[in-house]
Amino acid sequence: MIKNLLLATASVALLVGCSSEQAASTTEQAQACTAADIVLTNAAVYTVNENNPTAQAIAIKGSKFIYVGDNEGAERYACGDANIIDLTGKAVYPGLIDSHGHLSGVGFREVNLNLQGIDSLAEMLAAVKKYADENPDQTWINGRGWIEKVWPEARFPTRQDIDAIVPDRPVTLRRADGHALVANTLALEMAEITPASENPVGGHINLDENGELTGMLVDTAMRYINPLIPSPTREQTKAAIQAGTERNVSIGWTGFQNAGSSYNNFEMMGELHAEGKLAHRVYDAMGFGDSSARLISEGAQIDPEHYLTVRDIKAVMDGALGSRGAAFIEPYADYDTVGLMRYTVDELTPMLIGALKAGIQVETHAIGDDANRKVLDAYEVALNTVPKSERKIANPRWRIEHAQNIQPNDVDRFIDMDIIPSMQASHAIGDLHFAGDRLGQERLANAYLWRTFIDKGAIVPGGSDQPVEIGDPRIEFYAAVARKDLNGFSGEGWHPELAVTREESLKMLTIWGAMAAFQEDVLGSIEVGKLADVSVFDKDWMTIPLDQIMSSQNVLTIVHGDIKHQK
Image 1 (cartoon, rainbow, N blue to C red):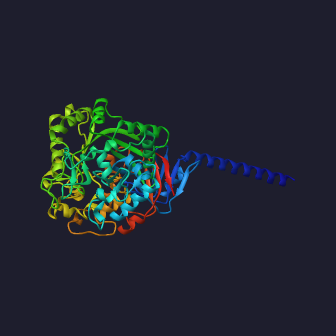
Image 2: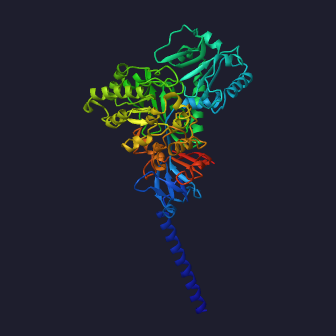
């Protein structure tokens, strides 16, 4: 009996001891665990942080990264209600930033007559006819996205082409770059445009060899007809903005720098953000005019969470290369024109001086070498007029958008004045199919100078200029590294030596984009304490053959710590 009692007592003691040890162990685990909201493991993480360039796992709590490191270290965050996602080797990049695009245009492209990606004039006309037939109640047919550079017809469409398929309703079809449109005869008559109409400053009404209207209106000449085109309602515009953000996060974009906006659109973005329907960050730039004057007067609106900010002005100095509106020092090789300049230096300078004093960033569209030179001239006048002591921000980080064709001495002026060349790699692999015809081979040595700028110490934020281009981050990454078209073609004058490395291309779409928007302390790299924006792809852009990049798929997009897209 005593023996049995002793055994029983020992057993109870052992159980109590074990329970105490287990309780202590559980307590220690609880104390050691810091539950994250999201934990990504077994990944190839590219942080774009030079002190810790790669990792296996990350943890997110709220809107910020709380851990970046190996899988073992991530275990202490993989507890509680954490959403643990095993990425099985997929590639993780800092949230990809489109440093130049047009957000409402992206959305309207999704819901209107979209002519992008069409390979011939005949195919475009068939698409317009199909759309017109399917929308008999639409009083004005308005489309966008055509580009003739790959068409076998090798010419612009004409009013006669459109008259043959839709003669009884006005039709306007914008070129992909947004710098030209073709209208049918009825639309031209409604706008009272005739062969005798005066070309506006910065625009051109194209005539054929007989002095008759072709239907093509270039740059500011589109203003003759734009007021007649039915404007979308506020609800339609708001829906388009929402659709644009949803489309963007579905392919990996987490941030968008909106080039040329209005306070009406900014207010709609604010409403969408409050409703939880603005899928990604927006850094807004007001168009030069009434909106920019208001921004200078009222000052920037900088969101403390960096989700929706306006502190930038967008001006447009010239047109596009394809429609021969880009302004050059010497005439085009295939047409008797030097392009179209919209403003003089004197017309830009007062706005620039006001922006410096108010702490407002400025970005100016310039494609031709003369346009880039004139913008630099205007920037130089303003920077010399307003000393740093009188500026709200000493280094204003002014930008030139596109910066496509630049004389060598003007490249050095970018560097000397700390002007940011904001460039879109997809423009090069499209334009270089016809740029030699437009400019001649010699001038192509001054075109799309990504490598030159980087070697001289500049940052080159990368964007897509969507809906001018498709707006796919895979294309932008590939184009910058390959400097070939998507079929692998590279021709005379493409200058492959001006391509960039994969590491530089990733910077163009991440940290350099953040720097171009004064956001490098909170965005652009994966670091503890930074805002949690992540783009995940099923193939590793940094290691796979270049011709496989376009087959990669975005499988996860996280913005501000929230999953916005997941496959």
